[in-house]
Length: 387
Image (tube, rainbow, N blue to C red; front, side, top):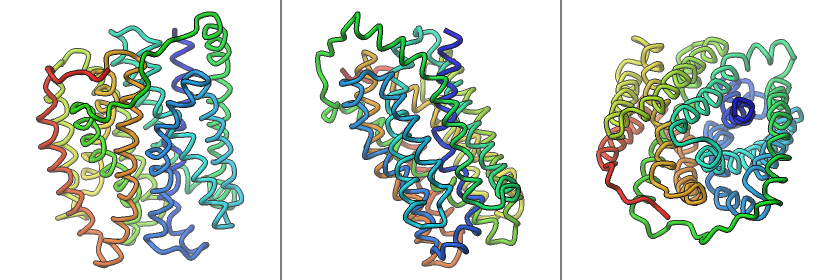
């Protein structure tokens, strides 16, 4: 079991790096490739859009080859996509590699909640989900902090972005024994899944999807524009990279704490409301006084976004009856939420271009944060589970 958990962490560490390593290098990439704010936002949007559009495909791969084998394929796709950024000075190669990385992240991110439910005992799902968050946001924090120093050391932003393929190689290597063992078990014990349809008509599924759409829009918009907004105020790229790493680093701690508390606090509304309030407070600070306490505002954002996401993963387990049902719920929820949220960074970039100020960006996001706070009051314990 510990080795299985370590393999899971090695894979999940790759689920945000392809995106979080880009914003600190934003000015360099824009200058080198002559991109607009909207086009630069699209570079962050593309993998998120893939995470939505390819979520249902993940379920089809899992039915055909098994969820474990599909995750192995996913991490290999991430490896190729991130590695191809070494030739990112050719614009279409940069976007194509980002697209591939997004496809791999979509497959892995969709299937892992169901694997947590299937491979670990119920009383450990909160702990494992917290560790899942620890690895994912830890990878995001480290990549945000060191992407600029790596570019300086390696002599190019392309080398900095591509270097994270080494992390994907570690994930692929660690997951390989799990894949071999699962293939043997699958051959000896063929699974029968009574139904493969996604829960499109289930009210609970739509409620979870709405929550995750708001959370994802907020997260990816903040990830894309926190660093550029302070570069716009005269901060250097290295310092804004550290600021973004605080955003991700605080999420590591708060994201781990949320699922751990979920094993003890069974009314999800208590924890979800707390996360929403912290996130909204950070957005309020960025909207009205960004220069007064930037590290505090970004820390509050991370304090809200960490448990907001990790508890969302817990909801995918809570509101499904079986591991297969959890996978179907995840496929539907992630398809809707990420497809909607994919427009977040680009839309916020367009708002910045139209208004000439980042303040309007934070005001819009604050409004969405308030909507998220209102929505989480609906997550009663008595909500029916999806099949």
